[in-house]
Amino acid sequence: MKEIYFVTGNENKYKEVCEILGKEIKRIELDLEEIQSDDPYKIAKKKVLEAYRILKKPVIVEDISLHIEALNGFPGPLIKFMRSSLKPEGIYQIMKSHKNKNTIARCVVACFDGKNINFFTGDIKGKIVAPKGKSKFGFDPIFQPNGKNKTFAQMGEEEKNKISHRSIAWRKVRDFLEKDK
Amino acid sequence: MKEIYFVTGNENKYKEVCEILGKEIKRIELDLEEIQSDDPYKIAKKKVLEAYRILKKPVIVEDISLHIEALNGFPGPLIKFMRSSLKPEGIYQIMKSHKNKNTIARCVVACFDGKNINFFTGDIKGKIVAPKGKSKFGFDPIFQPNGKNKTFAQMGEEEKNKISHRSIAWRKVRDFLEKDK
Image (cartoon, rainbow over all chains, first blue to last red; front, side, top):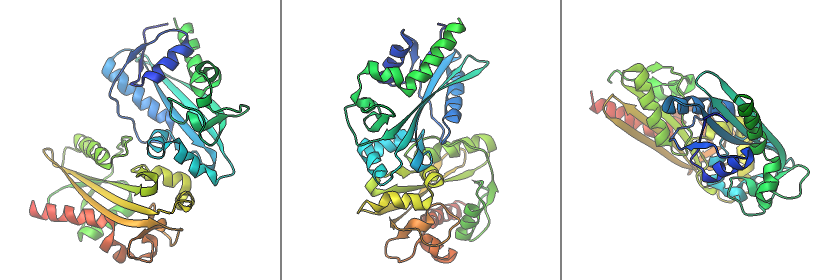
């Protein structure tokens, strides 16, 4: 795998990514502002270009979003603010009155080597359910993938990493970087 | 009033501000990204500095936020995304199950002359109610100021401009600019 830096300040996120890649990737913490948008690709693009401008080395960034069908895709990439204000319980409360609990959890990864930006998307469909399980991650206690009877927070790391939006996106990244060696 | 440029692409916002100031202010449309934050002052600060960097003349920017008590201040400055996804009706639906409908509508204006940033805040307390009235502005149909029995959308311009968060902030701006002549 080429020398490429994953830009994240989140230790849990970094560990999960290394787990999925099956090896350690270089990591750097940069204090990047993210732009306000409901489009995760726009946010990731701006972030990866800014990271490259600072570091001047190949960089990878990630954006996680939660697209709730009954809310017309809201909150999308703004999930982190909704989560910190309302907690998973509060998001579930909002969804209680909606019959349609369908939700897509999305991981968008953007790589930039100074010339080309490549995007990798991992989508997983599921439902918003009452909070179950303890979690290190944002919406894991209220997100139950379709066909499963457990939330992400109730799964072990291995079980979650087999199917998660993050793992789908990062496995594409792994294949891309392997090919590109 | 000194030569200062109000940065906005929103015609209705511009007209309302001129109405409040009692005169026309210069206007410029810049394609500025806003940063993701739940803090309107951070967003306004970044935006006014960026506008000055581009224009190299004194600039004014505005950020409108809606802080709903039962949602721990959410959505704040992210109201525009919540509004475009859910429409006023959808925001009201979320609030239906909450007894506490208290909300603050906030207008933060930031001026930068190349040396100092000055902030002016207009807050108005009110309640989220079922949508009433037609409106050009975001949350006007569901925001009812305390002590009134009409939403902002049901008021005429004159009536709204007497009490609105925008008018409170911009009257402070007017006084500041007059003093500074």
